[in-house]
Each structure stands twice: as structure tokens, then as C-alpha cells.
Length: 170
Image 1 (tube, rainbow, N blue to C red):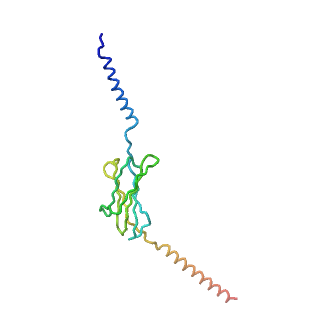
Image 2: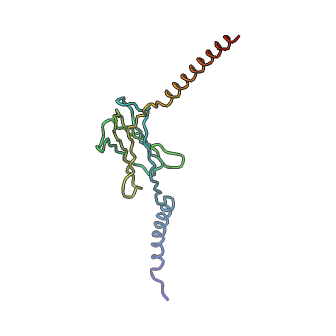
Image 3: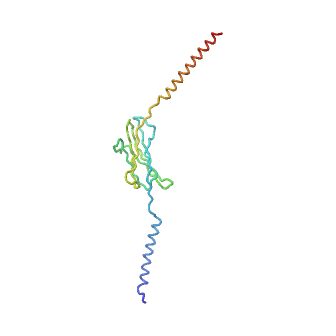
């Protein structure tokens, strides 16, 4: 049996094996990318007072990889003025965090929303809403204080009455 050309063929295949080995090493060091969806919340920077400038913060955390896109609406109208976006911050678990801020002057009945788009989200993006909700001072403490004051004065009057009555008996 004659083996003409097998040696040359084998030498050529060594180059193919080296190339394939190199490709496999790269693939094993770079496994497919993990994808983590963001968690989103929205809150005001300061205590809310009507017609006083404030800021809303859209907190986006736990996502991988960047980027995320954040958009704002006020009463279902897109808002771009007064919006800012922080830098991406890496968390210890390998995911990222980012903040988007919107400068607002709240008015009664305003509804704001923060919408987050990320490649991990299938279908609809994540939207969180925030409504202007001003706490109305409660009349409860004033009523309790008034009733307490009335009962205290009534007790003083009754005590004075009985003190005078007792002195008249002697």
C-alpha cells in the first residue's frame, strides 16, 4: 500500500487543528452573555408642596448589560426638558444601576411616569407612575386637643365649686 501525499496532508491539517483550538479557547473564555432585567422605582427628591420646584427620581437597578433608555411623561405627554441621566454604576453582583432625574413643579392632579427600555424586557417596557398627592392636614389632633382642654377646664371649675362649697359648710 502506497501512502503518497498523506504526510503533506497531515501537516496541512495541523494548521486547521491549531485554528480550531484557538477558536474553541476564545469561546470557552467568553460564554454567552447573561441578561438581567432592570428593577425600577420612582420617588420625589423632597417632600412635595404644590407649585414648589422639586425633582422626581427614576431608580433603575439590577440590569445587565447596559444600556437602558429612560423616558418621562407628564399627563401622558413626553417630557424632555429638565431631564438628566446619571452615569452607569457597577454593583458588586456585576449588574448596573442608573438614575434619571426630572425637574418638576407639581400641580394638583399631575401624573408623571418613567419608562425604562432594556434588551432583556420582552414586549412592553417597564413603566412606573407617580401622582401628585399632597397630604391634607388632619383635624383629628386639633379636636382631641380641644376636647382635652375643655375637660381640663371643666375639672378645674368643678374642683373650685366643691372647694368653695366645702368651706361654706364649716
